[in-house]
Length: 338
Image (cartoon, rainbow, N blue to C red; front, side, top):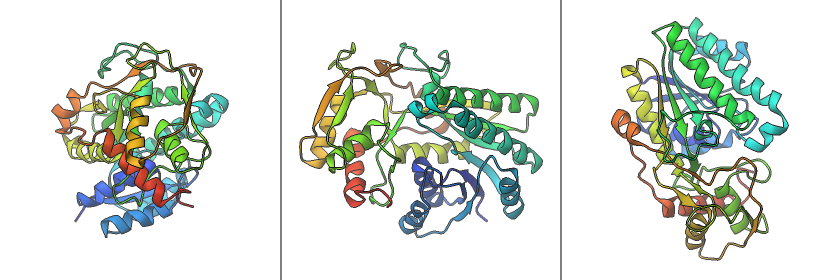
């Protein structure tokens, strides 16, 4: 009998790709999503890719009734918690919504998990918790801070989950700090479909390449990096999804709250990513330089030894695969899931 894994926010970008890898690994995902920033068609596509079924319940992690109903209905073995708002700029404009959704949601979820004796969680954290630190590569022991409400919600949630494990040794938690997820499933059936103008580089480039946006704005050309543009650790979303499956397998060995970086360990500049995308799309991508964004650091990339040691996991897909898979998704779905 395969284990049922509750995947909150499972219809979203990272959630849907993780559901594919969970199904392929023999797990049974139970998706809870309120569809505020995702579409249920992504789950139809997951079924198409895997030839397997998954369970979908529309509901909100802040709603105790929704959660209780799911835990009563299904014998949940562990939770992968993705459900959160995730745009840095938006979090500065509407901080209370971010605190309510991202923090209240986690607290309510943990309370209901406690009630049903399900104390295994993989939490979707972020490299934003390293704040404005310039000491790259970032190790899991690096000092943390946050420069925006979104980052603070990730940091607070990590602390909340640590406190759960301190108060009750039955709790086993793995917090995965992602760097910059990009790419799409190689089938081109699922990918990133952001609302409005994308905040992240890769969907922005893709929408310019497909003609939805006129040109890419490159924020800053005078950073102390090889070509003057910001350097980030881009990780293919399928590698990231594999990391969650490995973390699920590892959960039984955890004592307390384990924090693990998921990245490639390599920094790629904006212009390097642009070049890779031009190769994938076989055309130049128009761009123009504009001023730096406040709060952006010059370089951010991970030290990933811990993931290799504890999870036997390493990112396999390089920048050309990231660009090619994004382009395939974008050309097959020029308007996203619409």
